[in-house]
Amino acid sequence: MFENLLNRQEYDANAKTMSSDFFRNVYTYMFVALGLSGGIAYYIGAGESITLANGHKLPLLFIKLFISESGGLSPLFWVVALAPVGLGWLIQSSYNRFSMSTLTLLFAIYSILMGLSLSVIFIRYDLGSITSTFFVSAGAFAGMAILGYTTKTDLTKFGSLLFMVFIGIFIAGIVNIFLKNDTMGFVIAALGVFVFTGLTAYQMQQLKHISNDPNLEGVERNKLALIGGLMLYILFINLFLSLLRLLGNRD
Image (tube, rainbow, N blue to C red; front, side):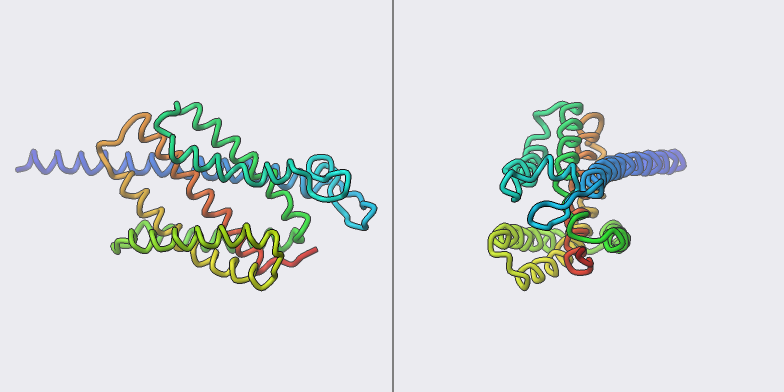
């Protein structure tokens, strides 16, 4: 009996170590991606500005990259803005077919593209609003992540419902790009806060189950840590953008 107890304690210690290593990797991927995206967005969106003929003041580098000769957004901007949708789906759906190095490269490209498209927030909102909203988002994200990790309630059905709502607001968001309806934008942002905080709790619970699975090891475990980092990164960015639309002061 004493030997069985020692074996059990050793198993629990190993399981705890594996879980900690898994989440360390998850958050490393997430934070590196956030740093890369944020650095690129700030470099492009908060650099030296000039005034266009139409009176709009825009960063010089942003103009060179994304403004057409007519003064509107160039096709390149829309390619950069929409490409992460397809790339994110490719990473999550086909990660088994890619090597770890390829997945890491794709994740880096995803983060760079997001940084390029996120540069627009430094044009639309003042720096103080962006900073304060980032910390509000970080607090809300951390709280829901802890809740998702510690709760004993099964969040599977809740998560499935939120994913359906997410698809709805994603489609509505694309439609509102053309409608430019402020009321619709406000509703989408408010729903987004609810959806992305809820999905954070759900995703953390799913990652906890993965981290405790003794059958996952080696490259497979590392790949799932990257996918987990990608999912948390996406949820944080979307939560931040939803809150920024609600709380941000426009320049």
